[in-house]
Image (cartoon, rainbow, N blue to C red; front, top):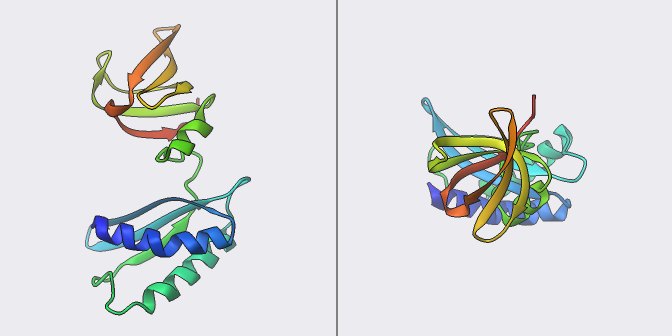
Length: 157
């Protein structure tokens, strides 16, 4: 289904750009018996419901006018904010997250763990440095980028 994501990303980008929003992510997933096409958009200060509806209407019209239909199965279109725990996908996302609390999950264990939360201290092409609380002591942990399966902002409790 990567092809659907690529097609929709290509169609959505000019719509999002025209409104000075950011296209954070596009996913096409099956949940139960239903398919969902989800777009996550944002802008400085946050995105509103009306702005999500605007992008949804414009994208829906574009998708309806493509022949042959790039998405043959029935699906639900959802356009929303990425939320407080926004995923980190692009390089710019990682750079903006420096100094913020993040959650990282890994392909292989790092220091015996499959995930860590902490403050992102720095980002390079090859590694991330995270300040974590390890048994009551603060420690800087260097993590190879190739080992990061998922990254997102996190809420510190």
